[in-house]
Structures are given as C-alpha cells and as structure tokens.
Image (cartoon, rainbow, N blue to C red; front, side, top):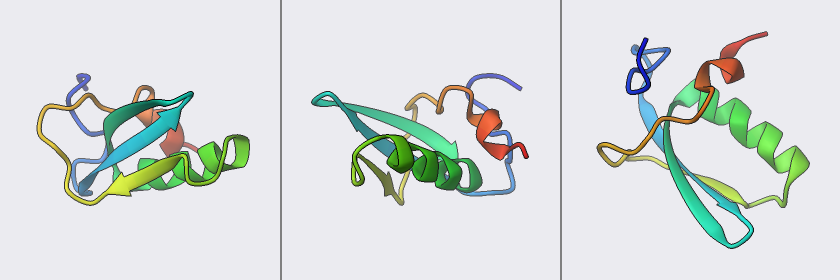
Length: 72
C-alpha cells in the first residue's frame, strides 16, 4: 500500500479538516478511520476541532497512520 491508497478501498473516502492551534490541516481518509479519528480527537482536544467534509478534494494527503485507526 502506498501513501495515496486507501487501506479500505471498498469504503468511500471523506475529507477531514483538523484545526490545531489556529491552523487547518486537510486529509483524506476512509470513512471507518475518519470516524475513529474524530472520536479520539474530540476526546483529547476541543470538540468541534475536526470536521468531515463529504466530498474529498482530489490530491490531498491521506491521514498519517490511517490504518492505525482501523485496528482493534
């Protein structure tokens, strides 16, 4: 798997917009990983500091370590 391939190609990709210290970071992620990421992010940071944008922009980077959000 490369940095541009989804760990779950059968799932739709969504765009995550993450806000941290006044900066916005956009990443592509499969829906399952995005859901777990949001739950963990909101537990550690300000609720609302991350959002899913339904349509993923082409050529944005994938969420770093995306597959870690799919494990047990």
